[in-house]
Length: 289
Image (cartoon, rainbow, N blue to C red; front, side, top):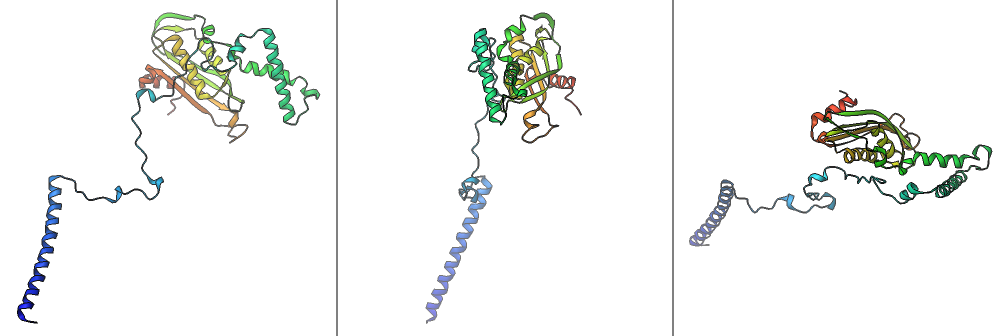
């Protein structure tokens, strides 16, 4: 090969190497320029790739909550019956003696069927009167279905110009769990800040009794009492706390005999003012530090 050809080839190789160097340099200059002017490069990051497993996908961002979605929905207080209208309640509340006797007979027959189903003999001496006794007891346990807020309050609201906290604590409450129809019992503490008007203090335990003498869950029972007082009295604020033991988790299930359940419902100014909330909880003995 001639010296001339060898020189041309070496010049071509040198030119190619120089071209590659210039390309690398221009890329580096562009990257540096993008950093300096704050622009985002078009480079695709690995995190933008779809997840291999659909379960690894990011959860969608939920829409912002409205202010009225922060709390559980308020029960509708029906002064002529239930806070939650249910089938058959109106019939029981307005039945005549003949209808009441028919209800008792039907309930007693159902209890006799239960005794037979659990393997007992309803005709043996100790159980002869049990169906009727249990039927009467069940109607007493659920007598709240035959009461309404209007009759219980009975216009016992008085204008006293009082605007400080009023509390009735340690109200004994007995109710039936609607899931297993076994009792849960405990104490309820009711407080309110009047807006000039006060209610007869005996009405607060009576309202608690009315709602507890129904098939209930503790969470709803607490809300029912708080919202009923708020609706009847129109105070500045209401607070209700309940502590109870549930036989459905004592006699069966997890069988935890010492466990207690605490629920609360605070409305109005007591919900908004931390000082009022703390005062209420302290006075009923829940701020134990």
